[in-house]
Length: 356
Image (cartoon, rainbow, N blue to C red; front, side):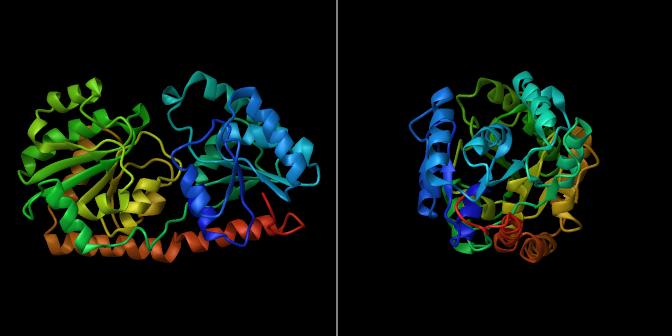
């Protein structure tokens, strides 16, 4: 989302400081026009480098991005007391058992400091409620949803044919996908329990998965596949950058997470006119609305009911559902509209949307 925001606001001088060094999106951010700082530092050295950068650059706005970035923004503000400082929270706290103890401690610490930022930007009202329940300041709440590049994520018949050919998915196959990193939050165990039943109900179904850790070398994942008896009906693609092309190749996209803030994977699939099945967590239901299927819970039986309802639709009706999903993204969640909301917020800082 940060990368998309940078690309959509060329009128802003973006200085992005990474606390953990260079990452997979570093070059994309540079290509979008950002200046990247801190690529060669980590740990305490990165915090010292951040302070030096702020002293040198004198930004108008300091924007923290996610928990560690928020605390760094708080520290950095001492070097630019005239700057407006904002936090950005990108997740809910629905299932604390899936959150690391160190992260829970960081959340508690931020709650104590949460009156300091000029605003706390949440990507979903559910995320705001979760954090305010553990002590985050209510007066600082700002809700700005994720936005999506509707030109990059768009229907593409040629890409659909090419990807399905590469994956050996004939026109008769029903491709049901899950694009998510391997993480307990993402509920791959529940997905495969659902897939086992769906495979029986729909003999045409093939299950296509991508994301970090989604490959044959993941023994825990392999055990889930084998336990469901789906070795010959599952495609594991690993971490992929061609997410738009993968989405257009799917017939149904799933998000079966135990918890979400505002799920990028769902919005990207919807923008590609791929019907989505989601669990009722975070902003998933708000994003999908009536233009997809919302499972009653993350329980496998409820996932089966939701996926089955979409899988049973005639092909033309399923495509029409996907078209309505794309229209919903165009009308409410395009990156251009969302970027304007960030710019309007930053403009209230007094000196406009300058470097930040």
